[in-house]
Length: 138
Image (tube, rainbow, N blue to C red; front, side):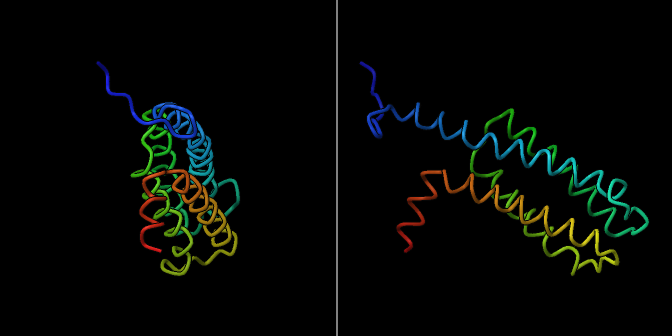
């Protein structure tokens, strides 16, 4: 005799988790696109002569794109979203920490960082386990 998980909203838990993974997947693909943009933005937006901004954009952009791609394929939920949240926060802080000389590079890093962090927070908000922890703490 099989032990079935308790239904949530009249639907088996596995179906609810699949819906959550499908909903999170668009955030992963959006983060992938933002990572690709970030990696090529020094040349597309014209700030490639600024070494710190270019190195940060290329390294973080490629890491974000690759991480988001493999997250999409593997459908891992929460752990990678926490990493994306940290990457987004880093991108917001990087212009001030690394001293970007270009206003375009600074604006690009901040906008992409806010976008990545918002996508990660959105995906994390769908995670039922995190919601339970949040409600216990408050």
